[in-house]
Image (cartoon, rainbow, N blue to C red):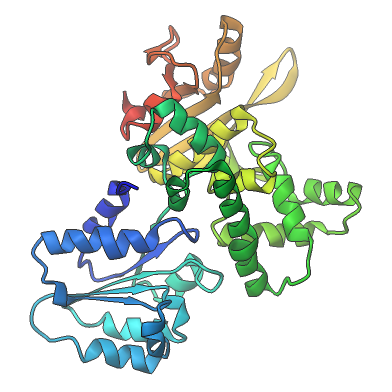
Length: 412
């Protein structure tokens, strides 16, 4: 398999080089964090003139480093290899395997010539926990599964074949090295049950609990739909499973903490405030979503919406679901904007529309965008293989490939 380019994350590490903070690389397991640090960033440092002996690479999940899972051993191992001259770099993979690592790293970080990078992702290593432990000295770099652009960079075939595979099996790097569909399917299903769910169950003492698996299946079958714990609890009851809304809310929190799903909150565009409920939930990897449904429910509209949402997160946007209250013929109703995307001073309104077969459909998709009452850029992303153009109302129409394959596509 060709080397997969992860230039976006590589640049984020480069930008943070020797900034005095502990770089905490987080993300769902098997998304490529270790490869990013131990291969791509390591090679970058070497090419920039850093001697290899000044980069300490410590994979704590390797049995050869088992003794370093004791904090005192880890501290001694690193300190005895450092000197006070020049710059040093420490890479720690699966750092959560060392109990008490926070104290070790907080102490080492006081050395001005030492730059520290750590990865971790399982149930004992959540970004909220670790950044708290580092007392303001942590700098998180969130890594996601492969974007479509990254996937295509190592895919043997054209972008249309790549899109079909990506929509089915998602962007976990190892999937790309598997040729047969059944191997990809088995791999994804095994990851869910033997890795992700087991992590969540171990952390939250959920052994023997059937609610988690049922909840994930319900969320997988309704991506892009508004829901909340109360509605989900009612669905459980109708299917003969006892679960309270508080239980459902807790389990959703576990899935979010484990980077398995993300929650998009609703934002009242005109009122400039958040709406407490309901929410939309999207899967961090569409292949893992499909694995929950045995690859049966392949609704292209919802899958494309999920992929667009993930791409916006990869690019660093804060993404909400837009609500536009309007009054029509004396009746108040709410229109929806799929995504309200904010990054620093920039804001974009985005609709995901698989197809625009006629003017009526275009008018329908434009409607909520036209009622926002401001002048931020408005975009409709379609699957149709159409050239990028602006409508008479100033709305940008763009096909999904132009959006996904150009990091600056929203500024066209």
